[in-house]
Length: 242
Image (tube, rainbow, N blue to C red; front, side, top):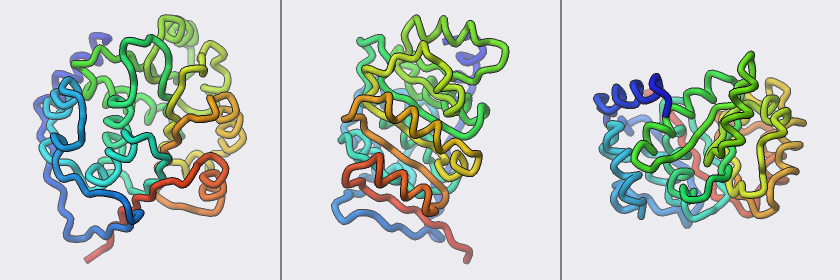
């Protein structure tokens, strides 16, 4: 972990995640989804649990109670949730539980619409995985392409970035990728990343798990889920004004 990221991780341990107010939240999920109200009951490894509690979490948010276990099970998932619902930690915890840190290969690829989001995701994963010796790199392009290549050659368990930068990173080995996360999928399609996402998907092993998160589910997002997913679990978290 770099010095700056390590410092931010230490600082993050001092935070206390506020208990979510569920008075204005409505849920819609697949029938077979269990609600698990404690991180301790999700079957997570002890080093990951240490990272979760050190980060400041005490109790899973609504979407975390419903989705983390499904990610860990290896199911394809459609999660409709706004920012602020705990969605980033949801897939981050699922990814961290699913990877084998003894294998220095990229096992999870996380795509988002902006560089800033990719960096934010990297910080969350490194903080939650602080006791796991996990390697996570954000491919964000710019002037530091050489650093991207060096990091990818070294071996990263998890890689985050925008679709455009991913498709140009020929150093990214996809043979061991077991999970593709599409964060803010509706925003990625709005920004014109549809073809790049489809191109990336074609490079992945055919049995790769797909986790899609989106604030809205317009036609082009649903079209993508129908092509990428097999009998996905659905977790829809809707906030409404009182």
